[in-house]
Amino acid sequence: MAPERLERWLAGFSERHGTARTEVSGDVVTMVAADGALAECHPPFPPLVGGGDPLDALVAHALAERRVGVLLVRLGGYAAGVFEGARLVTSKVDTRQVHGRNKAGGWSQQRFARRREGQVRQLTEAAAATAARVLLPEAASLDAVVLGGDRAAVDATLAAPTLAPLRERAVERFLTVPDPRRNILEATPATFRAVRIRLDP
Image (cartoon, rainbow, N blue to C red; front, top):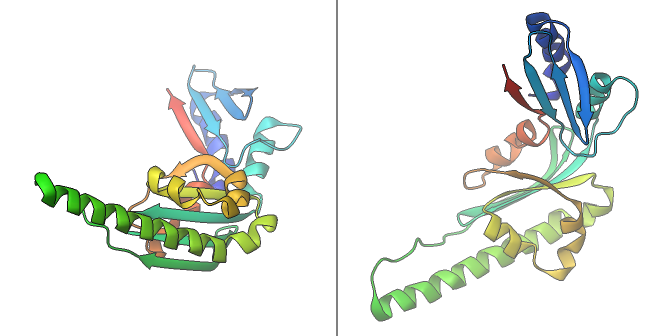
Protein backbone atom coordinates (compact mmCIF):
# COMPACT_ATOMS: atom_id res chain seq x y z
CA MET A 1 0.00 0.00 0.00
CA ALA A 2 1.47 3.36 -1.05
CA PRO A 3 1.86 5.71 1.93
CA GLU A 4 -0.19 8.37 0.15
CA ARG A 5 -3.21 6.01 -0.04
CA LEU A 6 -2.91 4.56 3.46
CA GLU A 7 -5.03 6.98 5.50
CA ARG A 8 -8.02 6.66 3.16
CA TRP A 9 -7.64 2.87 3.01
CA LEU A 10 -7.65 2.56 6.81
CA ALA A 11 -10.79 4.69 7.03
CA GLY A 12 -12.41 2.58 4.32
CA PHE A 13 -11.59 -0.62 6.21
CA SER A 14 -13.66 0.58 9.17
CA GLU A 15 -16.45 1.73 6.87
CA ARG A 16 -16.63 -1.67 5.19
CA HIS A 17 -16.27 -3.88 8.26
CA GLY A 18 -17.50 -1.81 11.18
CA THR A 19 -15.61 0.19 13.77
CA ALA A 20 -12.25 -1.40 14.41
CA ARG A 21 -10.13 -1.57 17.50
CA THR A 22 -6.39 -1.13 17.09
CA GLU A 23 -3.68 -3.34 18.53
CA VAL A 24 0.05 -2.70 18.42
CA SER A 25 2.62 -5.47 18.75
CA GLY A 26 6.19 -4.40 18.17
CA ASP A 27 6.20 -2.66 14.81
CA VAL A 28 2.95 -4.20 13.59
CA VAL A 29 -0.34 -2.29 13.80
CA THR A 30 -3.43 -4.48 13.58
CA MET A 31 -7.03 -3.38 13.04
CA VAL A 32 -9.69 -5.80 14.26
CA ALA A 33 -13.12 -4.83 12.91
CA ALA A 34 -16.56 -5.37 14.40
CA ASP A 35 -17.31 -8.17 11.92
CA GLY A 36 -14.05 -9.97 12.78
CA ALA A 37 -12.08 -8.85 9.73
CA LEU A 38 -8.43 -8.19 10.47
CA ALA A 39 -5.87 -5.95 8.78
CA GLU A 40 -2.25 -6.45 9.87
CA CYS A 41 -0.12 -3.47 8.80
CA HIS A 42 3.67 -3.81 8.52
CA PRO A 43 5.29 -0.38 8.10
CA PRO A 44 8.48 0.22 6.15
CA PHE A 45 11.69 1.19 7.93
CA PRO A 46 10.99 -0.10 11.44
CA PRO A 47 10.94 0.67 14.27
CA LEU A 48 7.59 2.40 14.14
CA VAL A 49 8.06 5.96 15.33
CA GLY A 50 5.34 8.16 16.81
CA GLY A 51 3.05 8.34 19.78
CA GLY A 52 -0.65 8.94 20.33
CA ASP A 53 -3.17 7.20 18.09
CA PRO A 54 -1.50 4.15 16.51
CA LEU A 55 -3.13 4.67 13.11
CA ASP A 56 -2.08 8.32 12.98
CA ALA A 57 1.44 7.25 13.97
CA LEU A 58 1.44 4.57 11.26
CA VAL A 59 0.40 7.04 8.55
CA ALA A 60 2.91 9.67 9.70
CA HIS A 61 5.70 7.07 9.83
CA ALA A 62 4.91 5.80 6.33
CA LEU A 63 4.75 9.32 4.87
CA ALA A 64 8.01 10.50 6.45
CA GLU A 65 10.51 11.77 3.90
CA ARG A 66 13.63 9.63 4.02
CA ARG A 67 16.97 9.58 2.28
CA VAL A 68 17.48 5.99 1.17
CA GLY A 69 20.30 4.18 -0.60
CA VAL A 70 19.39 1.28 -2.88
CA LEU A 71 21.73 -1.45 -4.11
CA LEU A 72 20.47 -4.07 -6.57
CA VAL A 73 22.73 -6.88 -7.77
CA ARG A 74 21.97 -9.82 -10.01
CA LEU A 75 24.17 -11.84 -12.33
CA GLY A 76 22.94 -9.73 -15.24
CA GLY A 77 23.98 -6.39 -13.77
CA TYR A 78 23.78 -4.01 -10.86
CA ALA A 79 22.37 -0.64 -9.87
CA ALA A 80 23.03 1.78 -7.03
CA GLY A 81 21.08 4.91 -6.28
CA VAL A 82 20.12 7.45 -3.64
CA PHE A 83 16.51 8.49 -3.20
CA GLU A 84 15.02 11.47 -1.43
CA GLY A 85 11.51 10.26 -0.78
CA ALA A 86 10.51 8.68 -4.10
CA ARG A 87 12.86 10.86 -6.18
CA LEU A 88 16.11 9.37 -7.50
CA VAL A 89 18.85 11.96 -7.04
CA THR A 90 21.98 10.05 -8.03
CA SER A 91 22.59 6.63 -9.55
CA LYS A 92 24.80 4.28 -11.54
CA VAL A 93 23.53 1.27 -13.50
CA ASP A 94 25.56 -1.26 -15.48
CA THR A 95 25.13 -4.68 -17.09
CA ARG A 96 27.52 -7.61 -16.95
CA GLN A 97 27.41 -10.94 -18.76
CA VAL A 98 27.56 -14.03 -16.57
CA HIS A 99 26.99 -17.27 -18.45
CA GLY A 100 24.49 -19.83 -17.19
CA ARG A 101 25.54 -23.18 -15.81
CA ASN A 102 26.99 -25.75 -18.22
CA LYS A 103 25.31 -29.16 -18.23
CA ALA A 104 28.20 -30.91 -19.96
CA GLY A 105 30.56 -33.04 -17.89
CA GLY A 106 34.29 -33.55 -17.60
CA TRP A 107 37.02 -31.00 -18.25
CA SER A 108 34.70 -28.85 -20.32
CA GLN A 109 32.38 -28.38 -17.36
CA GLN A 110 35.28 -27.54 -15.05
CA ARG A 111 36.67 -24.93 -17.44
CA PHE A 112 33.22 -23.43 -17.84
CA ALA A 113 32.71 -23.36 -14.07
CA ARG A 114 36.04 -21.55 -13.56
CA ARG A 115 35.16 -19.02 -16.23
CA ARG A 116 31.72 -18.46 -14.71
CA GLU A 117 33.23 -18.01 -11.24
CA GLY A 118 35.56 -15.40 -12.70
CA GLN A 119 32.65 -13.58 -14.30
CA VAL A 120 30.68 -13.59 -11.06
CA ARG A 121 33.70 -12.25 -9.17
CA GLN A 122 34.21 -9.48 -11.73
CA LEU A 123 30.55 -8.51 -11.50
CA THR A 124 30.47 -8.34 -7.70
CA GLU A 125 33.75 -6.42 -7.62
CA ALA A 126 32.36 -3.92 -10.12
CA ALA A 127 29.12 -3.66 -8.13
CA ALA A 128 31.11 -3.09 -4.93
CA ALA A 129 33.13 -0.34 -6.64
CA THR A 130 29.89 1.31 -7.76
CA ALA A 131 28.39 1.05 -4.28
CA ALA A 132 31.55 2.65 -2.89
CA ARG A 133 31.35 5.46 -5.42
CA VAL A 134 27.60 6.17 -5.30
CA LEU A 135 26.44 5.15 -1.82
CA LEU A 136 29.41 5.22 0.52
CA PRO A 137 30.00 9.00 0.36
CA GLU A 138 26.32 9.45 1.29
CA ALA A 139 26.25 6.81 4.03
CA ALA A 140 26.24 9.24 6.95
CA SER A 141 23.19 11.03 5.53
CA LEU A 142 21.20 7.90 4.67
CA ASP A 143 18.27 6.88 6.85
CA ALA A 144 18.47 3.34 5.45
CA VAL A 145 19.95 1.12 2.75
CA VAL A 146 17.63 -1.16 0.79
CA LEU A 147 19.06 -4.23 -0.93
CA GLY A 148 17.63 -6.35 -3.71
CA GLY A 149 18.23 -8.77 -6.56
CA ASP A 150 20.08 -12.02 -5.84
CA ARG A 151 20.98 -12.48 -2.16
CA ALA A 152 24.22 -14.35 -2.81
CA ALA A 153 25.38 -11.69 -5.27
CA VAL A 154 24.44 -8.90 -2.87
CA ASP A 155 26.25 -10.60 0.02
CA ALA A 156 29.37 -11.04 -2.11
CA THR A 157 29.20 -7.40 -3.18
CA LEU A 158 28.95 -6.12 0.38
CA ALA A 159 31.64 -8.41 1.75
CA ALA A 160 34.32 -5.72 1.32
CA PRO A 161 35.22 -4.25 4.75
CA THR A 162 35.05 -0.72 3.33
CA LEU A 163 31.30 -1.19 2.71
CA ALA A 164 30.52 -1.91 6.38
CA PRO A 165 28.64 1.43 6.77
CA LEU A 166 26.20 0.26 4.10
CA ARG A 167 25.70 -3.14 5.72
CA GLU A 168 25.00 -1.44 9.05
CA ARG A 169 22.19 0.63 7.52
CA ALA A 170 20.61 -2.20 5.53
CA VAL A 171 16.97 -2.94 6.33
CA GLU A 172 15.50 -6.44 6.51
CA ARG A 173 13.08 -5.90 3.63
CA PHE A 174 14.77 -7.37 0.52
CA LEU A 175 13.55 -6.45 -2.96
CA THR A 176 12.92 -9.18 -5.51
CA VAL A 177 13.67 -7.59 -8.88
CA PRO A 178 14.68 -8.69 -12.39
CA ASP A 179 18.08 -7.75 -13.83
CA PRO A 180 18.65 -4.18 -12.65
CA ARG A 181 18.04 -1.47 -15.23
CA ARG A 182 17.42 2.19 -14.64
CA ASN A 183 13.65 1.79 -14.87
CA ILE A 184 13.82 -1.06 -12.33
CA LEU A 185 15.83 1.12 -9.95
CA GLU A 186 13.47 4.08 -10.41
CA ALA A 187 10.49 1.86 -9.56
CA THR A 188 11.86 0.57 -6.23
CA PRO A 189 10.23 3.24 -4.00
CA ALA A 190 6.84 1.68 -4.76
CA THR A 191 8.10 -1.38 -2.88
CA PHE A 192 10.46 -0.09 -0.21
CA ARG A 193 8.08 2.73 0.88
CA ALA A 194 4.99 0.51 0.90
CA VAL A 195 3.06 -0.54 3.99
CA ARG A 196 2.48 -4.27 3.69
CA ILE A 197 -1.03 -5.25 4.71
CA ARG A 198 -2.16 -8.78 5.47
CA LEU A 199 -5.92 -9.21 5.38
CA ASP A 200 -7.84 -11.91 7.21
CA PRO A 201 -11.51 -11.41 6.27
